Image (cartoon, rainbow, N blue to C red; front, side, top):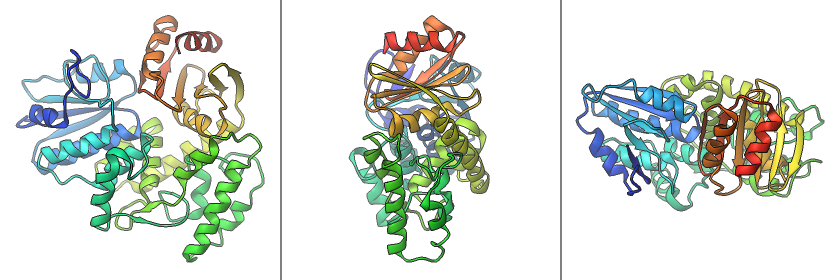
Length: 387
């Protein structure tokens, strides 16, 4: 199989290698990992293919096994298959180890002759945990700012212009969050922001930050994590209000409404549907975290949540705002998701875990997902041993 960043035989590849593999294909099937970064990457590549007149299809596979199966349904005589993420299929892979997939896809789209959307690429990078303007995203910010696509503004990073949607942001978690049964001064303050000036938005963001980091169960890490939800890169000519807001939409829809997420990444007129899916998913995740049963282990913090909770979203919130340990694990009835502060080869840990517990897995260096076929305590024990 062929990968950018890591190939089957260990050789490093590049976006240009993938572009060469796709060039001239009569049809391209893009199979994406179920996260916001990969959805953005798939959208960037698909748009470039459309610009070139190449027919394409985009689908999403939640686990390595599912992507392998989806990728295996194609026939290279009729086209090529591009997998965004890991799979065991004999296909072209876009799965960089040292940068977000969406950043690599932005270069790939350029190599294919397209005019890739820097805002979409930035949103994918933010979904992957990158800071706009840092490292590989510096060129994206420059491109977006030069063309007036993004403007830095005070306030809270949301996909809509409605300040009340702070309750649904998954870049924050506090008493104001949807599904959290607690009093918050932020709820009333949102009503006063209609047509307000920048200073009012700055005060609103400050209040959101204070309520987030001073919440009774907040960890020290919350003080750093909260910064991603503040001072947004606004996107005045886009269907969503900010880069981080679009990243939030992509991340949440990837978990619960991947078809809508793909359509959003492709640039279709589905922003309203994506916002509704985001609100529902975020509210469920916030409520699940607020009511979770937690346990602390050496290096691992575990939250058991209701059966149908969006575990990947809960795991990220748990890591950023509630976990005193570097790795957070959220467990529903038959699915688990993990999120780490830094590279802990979570994908490898999930893979080794399911060899003991049964099920399928997926992951990156800092995030992971698995289905399992055992009791939750058995999964926790197995994951702790291999972590």
